[in-house]
Image (cartoon, rainbow, N blue to C red):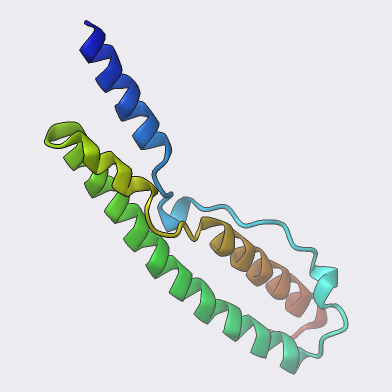
Length: 117
């Protein structure tokens, strides 16, 4: 009974430490007024750079989330020390949330200025 409780506690703590899938990362709010002084050309250029960064971070976050899921599976089924692999590597969710927020703010600022036709 004690071993089962310990195993369950380990499994729950490992799952809680897993990286989020990129599509579940919610954008951090960025005010569109941050970009109100930008010209349409600057907004479009900045938005293109943000899109590239979002794509890059999405790939990195997807890889981290997949690696975490594999480590959890191995830890719960075969080898509990594999749970320590979940903590290794970088979780890009904070950066991804920030970039998603910038994208939304740039889109709102560009729409308000009539940049996207």
